Length: 106
Image (cartoon, rainbow, N blue to C red; front, side, top):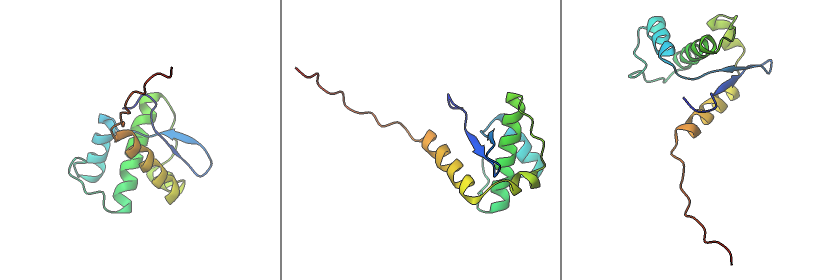
């Protein structure tokens, strides 16, 4: 997990924590029967289910109430919010580029 946990933005402007925990992996396996480590995530339904599992587990871990079903959660997401979330997630997993130190100015 990153120093600043990821969040996902709902249509009402509210942000909820959304990141992978062991609880998220268990939830996903129990809901779908699929192991998230080998799942292709090549369709919208599977992706939304995994996002819900991550959000549900992260909210539980942080003590944030998640008072909506998986369907209601999906109803409150836009395609752009999902794209933005995965862009932020990918940015966090990319190795940081090291820059060469600059010589001090004299």
